[in-house]
Image (cartoon, rainbow, N blue to C red; front, side, top):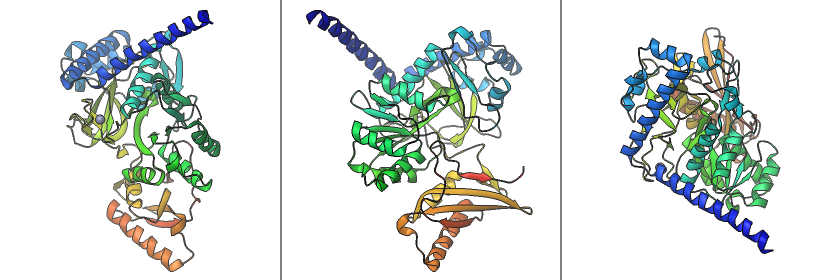
Length: 453
Ligand SMILES: [Zn+2]
């Protein structure tokens, strides 16, 4: 008995010591003062610029075209001298022509969803996988998750990065993982109950759907062990968060990532005042999408991301297309890592209706100010003659849906007028019964634009 016990004790002792050391390192980098973080970030930026200049013909050519060499990167502001990368570059160099390590150093591939054209293939070295898990793992600890938690991952597993991203991060912090992936919602709810799940990673629209199905099953999620939703991969509003928090008693933590960057990487901390970007993982800039000028903290613009330590598939000044603001002040949680505020739209999902810019998130925000409105809506855009027509289908809550035509008409008129005031452009509104619009287990596809460009 004793001979079996000692090796087990040693293994557990070693694991505990490793856990303590990793915990201390994690804590140290999370709470590092701003000045030290800036120095570390500059060191990593210089090293990455030099590495790419030496290793990659693509980057060397791009840098030469901008008349910049690695020696020109002396301060963090000098990042603006580096060339941009766009989604088009990733497509043009499909599948792996931008990789900067030999094939034998790649240990994993993922791919973007590829809704338009070819997907983007992302390769990872062992260090890339490790940094990815480290970054998201750190974020999970910043919302108070750890060894005592059971994290159910309801993001898709496979080529999409969501499932395995949360999986590895949750394991890294010692939590127990339930690799549920998407689908079979009733069984998902059963798992939450039976395994005492405390955190749930999903898209916000799927989280709402889980809440709806639980209600139908007669289960009150407020009474369950589930307290945290790790939500992202699609735009969502503060109003939607309020609903998830008040209706289901689940803290809605906003998460951020993209397959090109590795996968899900960053989340808000417990303060819920913006998503912290770890300064040793990524450098974030906000630019004017037209002039490409760098904008200051608190100014809204297009987010540009440089991944500082990626090896296999480096990403420098990537124009990811999200519109947001940067907050540089130290957060009330004590972390000096910068935060981005809510993503208010995407450069490329912006609709132009009769010359007016419309973001689906604006529509969602406006709809959510009406207590009768349910969780789902759909925007249909078509061109009639030369005029753009926008129709917003709005799902009502069960208690608000009625056979009384006069009442429904009055409500429709109220919502129509609110939308016109908020968007500065007219939209037709159609009220539809609860549960009649399509539900999505992945990203919600709320816009149907049938205009020919
Ligand atoms: Zn914070």
